[in-house]
Amino acid sequence: MRPPHEEPPVNPLPPLAVAIAGAVFVIEVIFLAGARGLVGGPGAVSWRRDSLLEYGFSDVAFDRMLQLGVWDWDAVMRMFTYSFVHYGMAQVLFLCVLVLALGKWVGEQLPQWTIVVVFFVGAVTGALAYGLVLDTPMVLVGGFPGAYGLIGAFTFLLWVRLADSGGPQARAFILIGALVAIQLVFGLVGGALTGGGAMSRDWVANLGGFAAGFAVTLLLSPGGWARTAARIRRR
Image (tube, rainbow, N blue to C red):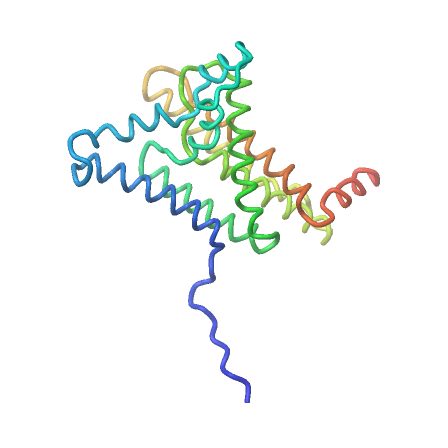
């Protein structure tokens, strides 16, 4: 007699995606607890502000490093650390949903370690795009360039699947198109409401992260480069 097969009530999530989302969430909880005086004493009120300044990616420091031609370890490390500090819980929750959902989908198609590679390559490339394209004193914070890297991985895998099934490949880019449009609208509305007329430029980093995630997945997925090159030659 075959033993009964029990399906888990919730589909298991990739441990590495959970680790990324969990680290971001725990840091945010610590900031909130400090701001409410639950931990850390009086100085904890400024933990978030201090962390944004200390760990956020600084375009000013990055430009100075390039101009002087001197390797600045702090400026380089900020390309990674900025992904773990955020402005508030709403931003963190949205990021965690993206990382867990996209990480699960990508982790089912590719080896688990791909999730971490794509996330951090997206984060670093997003920071580079922010530093090279823009000239701004505003620090870049938040894990969305890394999450957009996972969106790039999702897009490439879906694009391949649609190509193999004969479906419309343009459908693979609906998600990134919708997210960029929403971000641009919210940025314009936010700038109008604050009276400054300016909008957030984080979308530059996000698009850099998306492009990096797409390219990395093309290289890491089995036969990804060969299949893509074959389709290009057929066209």
